[in-house]
Image 1 (tube, one colour):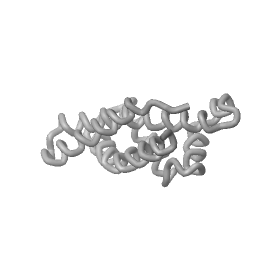
Image 2 (cartoon, rainbow, N blue to C red):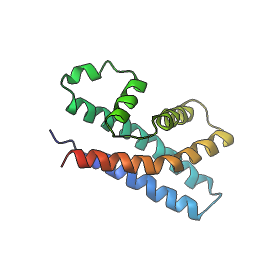
Image 3 (tube, one colour):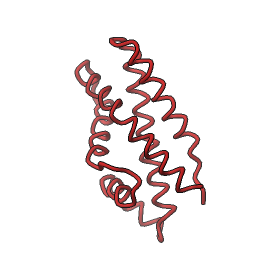
Image 4 (cartoon, helix red, strand yellow):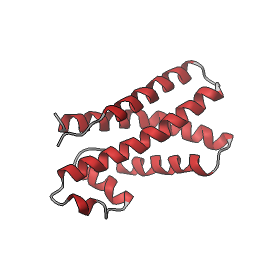
Length: 133
């Protein structure tokens, strides 16, 4: 079964454009906030597509539903779909910050995380697409 990555492709592209614009307009809070929002939904799509790929590859896809989030990421790393699994745990922590509280210091932290996340999101997308040729 081939998976549809069009939503993830659009999200990664959107995040990339946001990062480029924010980088050229340092200090623009609205652009920073747009990058943060794009990071949020791109991250969500990344782990959901990772899960779908693991389910598609699994002998018993239903077993994947029993994985904890950390187990899912570790499985993705073991299968060569992501690297630096600890960083992916950190991305989740930063993503969760945005849904609970929001202040300037946290916004800057999440923005910096989004910048680090972009290459990993692009790498995951490339691996997923390669596995579905």
